[in-house]
Image (tube, rainbow, N blue to C red; front, side, top):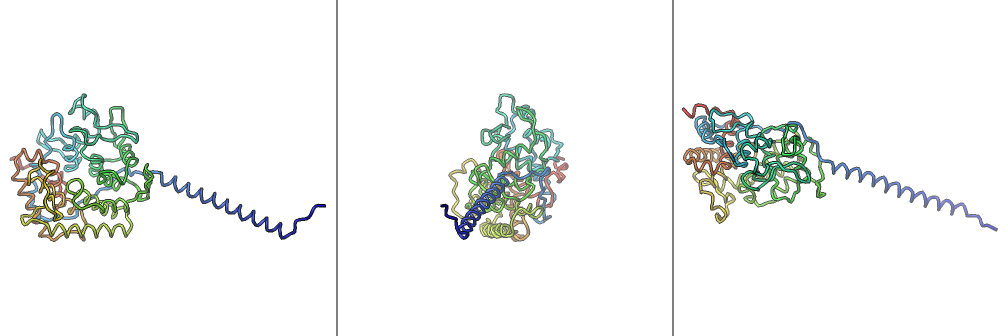
Length: 396
């Protein structure tokens, strides 16, 4: 005869099964949420059509007079018309002068002509010839300029793209490659896809993201790194101050740009913003302390012993213009709370003006990339972009 299962035992089994069904359902539900979250994180941020614009904050005639500014900028015209203009000169000059720039000087390229060389393979071929490697190439992630591969390539990772962002190039601007036509958005997508926090240079990638990305959301790199602007800023501030391109000054500029973009479209947490401001205040205090009595800084602007073993190609004046011009440029865009005393800025501005006036044409040509930052800095301190300064009377 079959023995009946007691009621309590049946209830216990039912509860046990129900509990485990709930656990399994919860696990499946949590897994679905996690999968959805993972898929969202893998989605790259949307790109805004027009990049944000960071404009000058100050107008200080005590740093550079109208007359001196016009004289300096006249000497720094982009006289690159002809064959084989160095691409790092072209993209520096475009960033310096902007798309709007035009010149009476027949040797000087306009802003539009410079942009065409960078984004239209046909224009590139006209100046570099069909036998040259193209500037725009295809990789596994998309279209990008060749980097550090000779004079017909970009000088730094994402430098050319950051230049195009800073001069206001819209994301739907046409790009002509050797294989056909696309848009600038394809180049921005390539940078988003290939970016790594461990890449050698990340200063210009930071500018591209800050100016073009539509929202401050975290995103997942193809290496599985979760990235946001607080994290990028932490990466920038982790490095020894003078290490990096141009004695570390491009990293400082990138931090300032994050602050200025954050004022227009928040991309930083409050804590992240405070960290950047404190860091830049400390950098400013260091620069005030190490400024030479003549007004310049050198490669060792952090006060360490000057090491020149890797600087044999630079004259002392070129090194100092590099260090001083870059410092004055990021300060010209920085908020008031990280500014140095007025006297520090005046001494640096006057030293830059006098040094550039004294340079022979040959040295201006060889040091043009450094000088582009110095010239742009002086214009910014008068509340203008260089193309807004009238230099037409300088050749009379």
